[in-house]
Length: 271
Picture 1 (cartoon, rainbow, N blue to C red):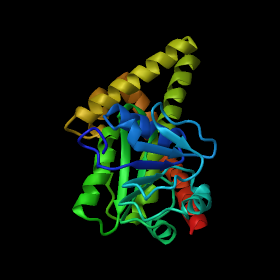
Picture 2: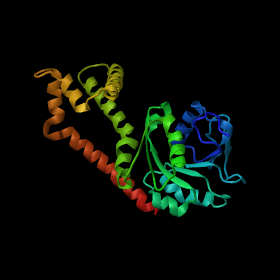
Picture 3: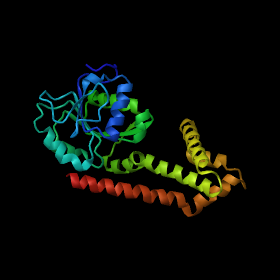
Picture 4: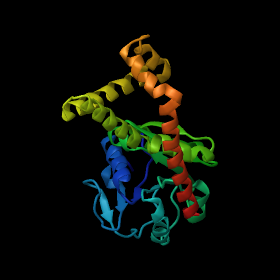
């Protein structure tokens, strides 16, 4: 049985343990999951946290209570072949395969309940966003999925799977876009003459404080932006550039649309 009363009882197996899967597992262990209850199966047999059983093939054991697919979506065929000898079916199968929809997972894998999960990288520090989707799950299965999502940060269930690619583009890929914005903000400061390292520190600290303030505010980010910008002031002058013909909104819409299209392409390839 897993230690940490909030986690479902029974073993947890991870097929794959890359950047995202490893980040999630380390966070769960930090939140009280017993490493001895976890088995990681990877091609190399390496990369698992200390105390976790690490294998290159499926163990000759009955199916675990929870199994997570933590591979790249293009590895779905390999995962299906790897799991072919599995005896029985897990109660809960969590999949973080980007773009692979619930129907494709159901066709390939047996489980009492299948839940699509799309985490983003800040789950590593418990400040991530995890989007969840399932069909016809029991209240116990939903509670089990939420028990794994809660230590990772904010989580939300997505009612319509048609929105999952958009959610993945916004929250799943979003940290990459935020990191790029931070870098651009720093480079813009350096272009005005600031030392590059100082501009980077200022940009990151500014983003951190602004994000925390936005999360704790009782008004929208749009209202906060207007509150910062005094009429005729320097912030307003800068916002006028971003707001001109909705320049920033249009840029980010194109950015998310590109990610959404790629998610849809990966889903089609997995079917």
